[in-house]
Length: 257
Ligand SMILES: [Zn+2]
Image (cartoon, rainbow, N blue to C red; front, top):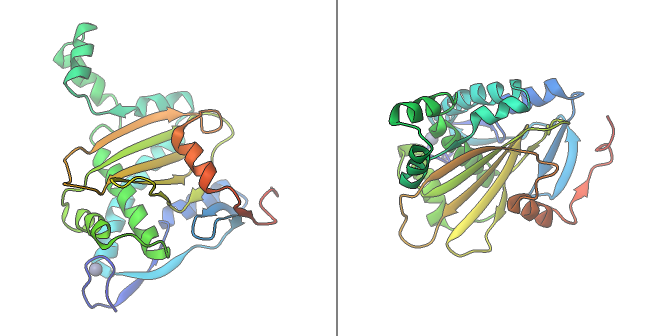
């Protein structure tokens, strides 16, 4: 069998399409049935089914699992914090103009550094970024959605070798009640030629990746983490999800508690 990441001929392991710690979390906070959205089936359902497939060799599964374990610590920390505490995780790359602005407000370099370091994930952003791409990559392998070989290579080389892959990542942290406890597979939007958008949810977090696929890849990776009320915020990406999910089917037990 050919490993779907390193493409070596190896014995393949049975892998979770959605990482196992997320299933475990969902089973804990729900009645044992998890709300799941499958973009491929366009189906919302409550199910304890865990998607598994033979995708990767032992080494590649280990490579992805290592980062997923690191991400699961961040995930737990975020989900343990109260709604108002979510603001502490806010993150954006400070470019020159943002630094200028802070300096004009009276911050010096030392206090800017202190401000950055007060964020518990300020040095862990690469873990979020790698997690987002690996989540999408697992889903692409599971899904029948076809992407061009060149785009698959971008993700594959990033995951395997840390090669450049230009993308923007917006992570929203749900900060209102009730909790937003659902997992979804990645939904793909490819209306634009040079950008491809992927969105997915894990409990109380929304990931939106805009992958630059057209032209020369530019090194422009930008990641933003921000609190958000998923029920009220009229966000472009949420609106896009509503559109792609129109006509989706819902399993009969979905509204049961
Ligand atoms: Zn492999």
